[in-house]
Image: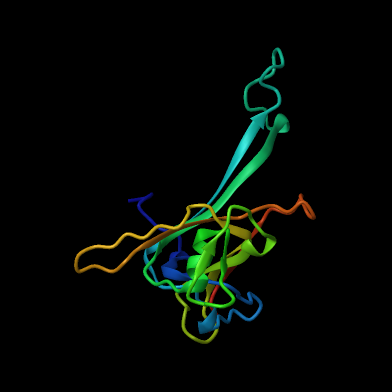
Length: 193
């Protein structure tokens, strides 16, 4: 069958497994520190960059709809979502978004009604990539969300004979200090021999 084929590079270009969420990652070395893992997840993680477009030619007589020179991106919704199975005070504070950990009692998380700059944090998702994905020189895909804030709120779902689940959605945010920088980066690195 002439068209029942796959690219010769298929096994070098597959993203594998669920990946991990990290508070920090160095894409130049491809190294992840275990203490930077945010938590254990279940069901995988979903990332989306959804642009909203405006057609500046839509109200111009004789201008075809979706003329490429008049199409503009007016906003982006950049988010990562999934479900944590593990939680500690740092992660719970992050999920609540506007919250602080009590200085006198580190087991006590106090929600706030106002956001602070420290509520925004960088988050990395890193997953295995390519047929060469071992400990040394392994390939990876990494997504770096900048100024991420929990926009899904804090939720806990428990169940009989089940693990508690903490759904999350983090949204990346632009900064007034650098409004032209889209608040995420993407790295795709094939594994080496």
